[in-house]
Image (cartoon, rainbow, N blue to C red; front, side, top):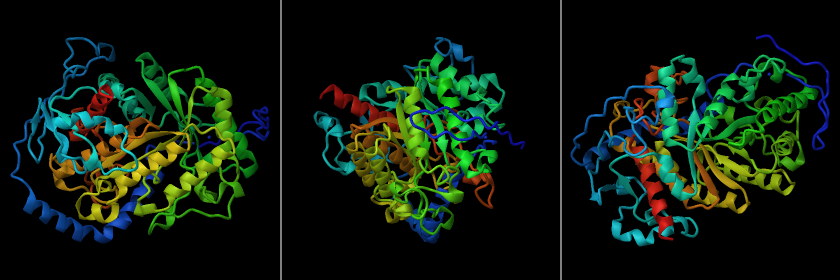
Length: 550
């Protein structure tokens, strides 16, 4: 790729930021390398126990499983039409008021309660009954870190309805990404319309997956930005009354090659120039209420994975406490030692006080995670120190790129992640106590870690244990969010399994890529709600009812 560099012009002073030479930015890959490495680490931890654990798990499930349920046929996919026809009464797509019933079945069978099915079969959520409804306010007021078994009744509807309608009564936003790279590249107007209509029906807030990142916009350099895909998502969200999260203005892991090759003394200028261009272009778009300003800056210390052991206390400034990725693991640190402070202050100066500025990261979401047992402390310590020196961080984003085993179910799950979910609630409360908002920003739940294949039962959308575990993970994290006043947003890194960064196409291993498809989202490839979608709807409706009787 041709590297484009600007002239030696210096940027103007802005909030005391140093004047330096401007640089210029590369090609944006479609995969997420930092996520792949993190999941590879989980795979390395699990693989020692995997064979014995899976065999034991299979035999235990076989011996204890109820008779196989009758599975209803899935509804045929609806015909696509233009996005402008989304509200047309003649549309064959699911409407806001009525969606097809769940196309699978529950391994525990139905427990009809006032036209609903009980969510008690979801691991970790108690099988309580309608008479317990007066206790529902405890969903948002249980002190400390209760076991999820202490939650009141969480019924799951038999007919699906839009998630955003249920979320409105909870005081939270629910959202997903727009997989603009994959969808726009299809050059299929009908499919794009169908996909976007699905997002409009279900969500309040949308994040562009890749199109608004600096690596995508400045692939040819500062003087030849490509704003088209980002503009398209910005315009579309605004036209349909959706909020948007801008992602991301400063990321050390993923930058163009020409920026990575700059001398250290030119990197500050490149960072500021790219950020200014994005901030100034979109600062008047009021529906962009949340900005992921800095992404994945805190270092990793992943078990058994040297490539993800990048904490080096000798790098950088003393006030950063040795907590940041640096050297070959970061474009910006320590070459721009104050880049996080600079990025947040520049964003505040340009955007003003009414936008939520977010620090976003992975691997710290629970205080009990054996994969990187101390990252929860490192992120907490860094954010606490940054706030103390006046860095305007308004919210912290918890990514949650996880697998079924994080729900603590099965042999390997119990061994490795038995207390993971309780640790999530602790971590939400800890950050809330710092005075920042808690955002769930990128949750997806795979049937396995990407370095290991998924079982055949999952590939066939078997509605048994694997889908129940996935539903349980999505639902329990949402329940923790609803029980934490500081948690205001729950967003997923994908909505339909049809378009997913966890589809195995990045070459996870020696087996065919389809074996590594994680089916990590809440709607299937035909846009029909999976069990996880029903579980989320049930939790939202329980909270909605709790608020109504508060």
